Image 1 (spheres, rainbow, N blue to C red):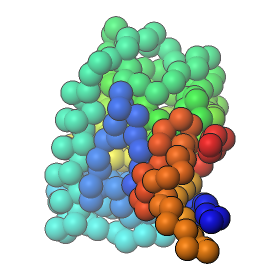
Image 2 (spheres, helix red, strand yellow):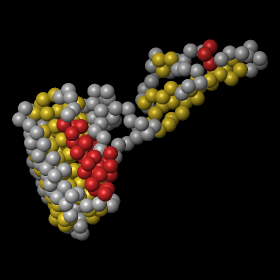
Image 3 (cartoon, one colour):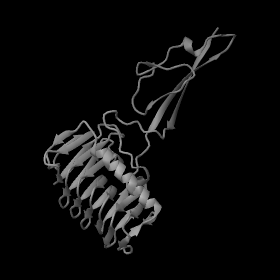
Image 4 (cartoon, rainbow, N blue to C red):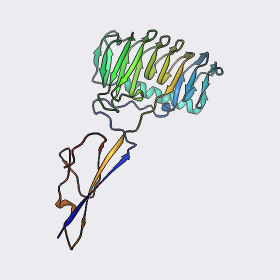
Length: 277
């Protein structure tokens, strides 16, 4: 009597993100569709390129498009923009209320930070040079920066993402206004209570969302950040009997990284180095 154990190993792509328990993402809901969202006005100078939707509510004045271009839909004082502003308020309040918080120096340039929630003692943040955000191999790592007042980056400053960090999972809750310096490279979603100003050549992978006032642009590239979907490894245990065999899958223990695989139920884990025994 011979029993044959068949292991079916397949790769699937899960639409569900597994977020670190310590820091979960900030849900933008309908505001997620917007690369730029403002409350009073949106003013552009030069050939800015916006990848994603552009929205304004309750204001009505959008200028500078063209020469600026928007790849998505422009929602000016319509129901979609109004709902996006409502969802922005919810997201802003969520980020502002996050705990536990690690207090770090006001100047973020020259530092490397891992996933978590951060504020500063004086309620502002600045970036001179390079701020590095390290996901430590977790593509779902979330970074939340909370300011009671301003966020200011200097000319040519850089926010760098390493080891799987994604701009979609970086949130900047700004208690007043954000200003990005000339030719700076910025990553993450700006959730500003008041306004946001991008000076000449400042580029953003993320979103520029302002609740109560204006977004001002000058020859910028703003690309709405979208999280990459990580592949999943699925292992299913099954048995094929021949010559009158009566064994079942439960007769053959199978483990992934020491955890038992349940008979006829797919066990899914992140793709990487795993021990199947």
